[in-house]
Image (cartoon, rainbow over all chains, first blue to last red; front, top):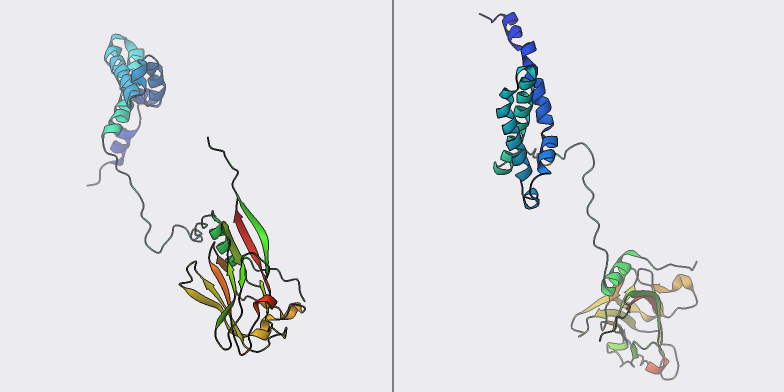
Length: 149
Length: 147
């Protein structure tokens, strides 16, 4: 028996209670801003290290996420969602540096260059550098001018 | 203390006559392949003889009679004259003895280049005996000189 389409719709239609997701999204988008803000206060020698700024941002988000319940009401909820969003982003940014990334590459089938255009023109030969190379090139490419009739 | 000298490469026209310092002339022996003209490319230079460049050669006997019988071969050789390649194989000498008619001047059918110390050799074989002091030569091309 097919599921009642109405019940599925009911489940997936956003409700008023879903607004923290939007705030979390904004938090995720603003992770860069948060990181820059926190990163400014990092010690100089830490700033250059890979992932240090993101880690600091993640810690700040974590602290915000954990402390947000102290703020009562909707604002507390908003802060929590914002911090959670940026926390997840920063965890992802830090984790990306340590987890091997899989690169998906589209391999062109042999004999089928991408697009219907012309193949790449061959690279130009290196310019002659020595007198021997110059003379050889001159002899090969330039005919003597003929002024006679 | 070293002195910095400007370096570069000059490209200039080349006309080689029998008086050119790179040219060594020799007489011939009857019916023997004789190197009547030996041109050695000077140091620090490379010659380019292009398609259409001219070669004029006039050989005379000791009695100042122009040699019209016999054949000419033009070779290029490395600095040790170990490997010789004919770029103009046996050709009647009369083909090279024309200077006043542009349409009949001998012209190379393709280009070639020679580096320093390498040779261009003109070989004559014929019944007459060429006198080296009466040989006339003109070869055109381009020379690249290292400064």
